[in-house]
Amino acid sequence: MSEKAVHLPAINCQHCLNTIRRELSELEGVSEVSGDLEHKQVSIRFSEPASWDSIRQLLIEIGFPPEA
Ligand SMILES: [Cu+2]
Image (cartoon, rainbow, N blue to C red; front, side, top):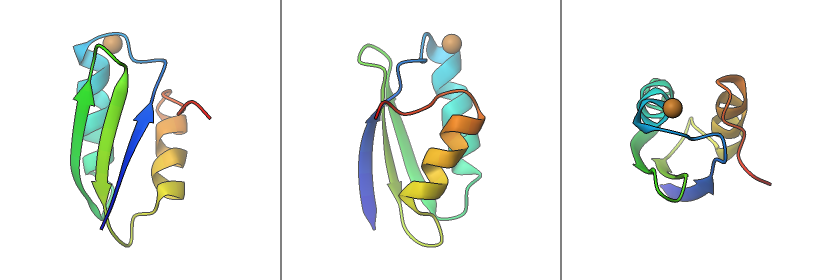
């Protein structure tokens, strides 16, 4: 089980967080997604088969690239 907090500068409103939460929870292995609108940050708890690489790729695809 891993947990990662990432800064997603493209987050602007609650709707963005809802989209991120919905899309990420469809990824097998992702067990929890919590968002912080004020800091444009999302915490993701995951285990295999999900990996940080697959999560990062999905975030890029849906328009919320993690800040490097
Ligand atoms: Cu939004």
